[in-house]
Length: 193
Image (cartoon, rainbow, N blue to C red; front, side):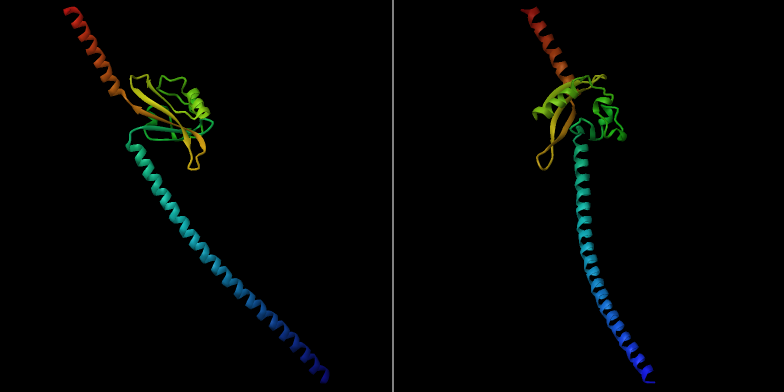
């Protein structure tokens, strides 16, 4: 009986020890759960901030897209290797561009422009950081003012070139008409004098 009592006492002590260990583990688990809840709340706050920034970035992207499209100035963005990074609407009316052309060299894409030195001039702009502007004809009689400028990041790092194409066909036609009228006037003055 005494032996059984000592065994029960020993078992009881072991159970108490195990119970204390379980309570300690339970307290650790509660602490871990509270830490996890705190981390989860922090993550939710960071996620909400990120979502807000993404929404703002989407709005800015939409604003920039609308601004670029409203100017009716076709713009092509090239990286340092002169591969297409992005282009605005209307670029497909000058180049045979499709969305899948992003990443391809612009020189590989067919163009209506009579401007074979555009790639070389783009390289020169990258080298010198001095923009280039020329009036260039297209195969169908259209004219464009073509500007090639360095693409500068917010950190003022050169990361390619931006090429803009402004349609100046109406101005060129008017210029030709004025030249023709001027020539007629000179001829008329010459024959009268």
